[in-house]
Length: 468
Image 1 (spheres, rainbow, N blue to C red):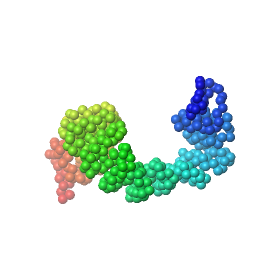
Image 2 (cartoon, rainbow, N blue to C red; image 1 turned 60 degrees about the horizontal axis):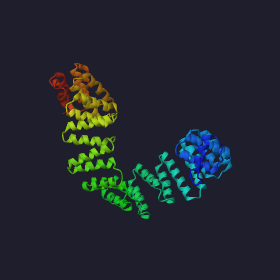
Image 3 (tube, rainbow, N blue to C red; image 1 turned 180 degrees about the horizontal axis):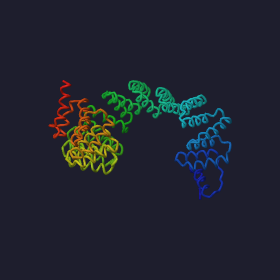
Image 4 (cartoon, helix red, strand yellow; image 1 turned 45 degrees about the vertical axis):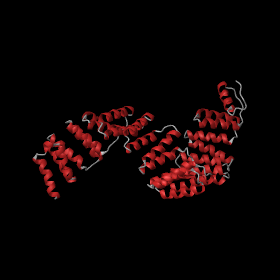
């Protein structure tokens, strides 16, 4: 095999050739470092370990190769062994900041974040290069995030930006901290100050617009996104956010224009297609609305909002057959989505397909949607189907999530009376009228045959007299 020495991957190619032939070739320590870095970057841990082993055999005094060894030990959660290697390296080079960075990494992986911070601060005191300082400030900021000390994190992420004003990761982290602390005013102040010195920073304008959007100052949000677009007229995110603002301002035609620009700048996104559909629906242009809803699910069949929008579109127009057709397609694509099953149940209920509606509500509950409405709707359908025992079991489960709920108690009272379980019926009905007499209509609606029963009438009327 012929190698070109001009090939920047030449050491890597030689190394992999060596592994295949079992020949032992010599590499200088920096070549080994590049090879190991390549394997770690690509998640090839076994090859990285092999390169470290061979590297240390050829360069046993290399500090950097030992530091790579520490990285592998941390990946394998061998923290004690990593500490031992670092202690030996510290004895050899007590002023090597990289050793402290790795020590901090080992501490962080063990959730010893304050100790990791203290160790990183030592590394910062040793550093004298702005680029390294910025990386270290970012590491300290992240450790403070792990401790939920957002104010301290902000301090260090700001230091990152003082070192490098294009460190947009730090800028995002600052805004994230302010958001978490619900300090939108402080975020806006900081971003405006940052923009005073960096007026063409599209990322900062974008973040500022999102802050104004959060506090519902849509005029200023719109202006901020305009400046983001002026700074970079290919910034897809700014057009998307501007579209959302224009929707809030009910300027649907302009919102559509902005969303359409994103389709021209980049591959179509399901979000933009969906929003265009909603805008056309608000404008009363139903054909275009449904056209874009369908494009949304063509683009991303797993986007539940797309299928839900189509189903609700037809449901609002009382076209339940078409609504059922599309929600069935959604359920076939993702049968574990409770939102799909809830809609499936609702549409079947409207079509009076009660068995399918009950199946939909049951599946919704199985998938963790424990809303009161879901329990009640399923219970009512079981009553309509004459499945009284199943309805009681369903409502008892509901009562675990919603104890002392009048709507549940009226239904349980009516069910037990219907099954001639008089004591249970009296117990639940008395509970129900005690909790809320205004829901007593449930008995006449769901159990019309019980309205003339003297005991039922007496419990309800006595309660009405007492409340008056």
